[in-house]
Image (tube, rainbow, N blue to C red; front, side, top):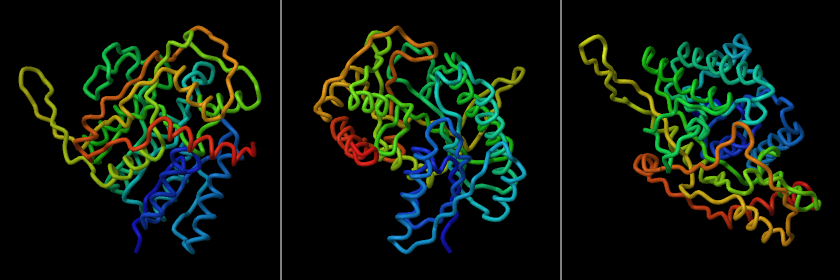
Length: 343
């Protein structure tokens, strides 16, 4: 029998790629998504259709899609009871830094209540590894670069970042109390085919092709560790099959030292190269063979000026080495974009 792996956010950008690659590797995938309208639902459904078309071509039936909201604990319980997944990848969350400023309740419900429900399912059904998406946004206003997993991360600059940091703390508590192996992946600006329409690559490409202006924040003095989706997906799947055995930590309790051994980790997944946003735009312009109309604006509330991942831990753990240059990644993205949106 094929091993059941549950993937939440399966109609999302990263979730779609993870699902299709797990299927290719011979696993049975249970995909959950609530198909909310934060961005174009047609794109989410098209991703799911792509998975089913792949299954049809390969004559496979190793994917089950279930429309489910993580806040619905009773439905989650029924799904876990029926499918009994031993590995869970949580990629479902209310995304977007700026959106969190005006819509805080959506982040509380999805990123905290929904996450807690998943942890309870992992506890009740003895899940062997719970892997979940955190974010580079947890590093907040840190000045030290590159960002390391050992850095101080208690100064989030957005509610979105705060919920992701809370997820790491919640997972640590469950790992410690109930011995649930958990891995939090701090993702750095993922881009590529089937990407999110609210992210810079999609926004910029659409604007350039339709001769509309693009907004460049902080007057162009912005840097991002752009990470191609194939590199991210490869790392996620490799990490899934290496659950943490323990995390040795020391805490002072009164005057005695107690050693806590917890099957828990957080780990950066990035490209380990910080690229100036203007350079990214120029690479996009070259691939599109068209110049953009730029409007320079001040820094947006909740944004980070620079992200840059230290991936030493990931390299040591799975021999990770990003395979996709920014030029190649943008070329692949633009090819998909023109095909999907018929430009």
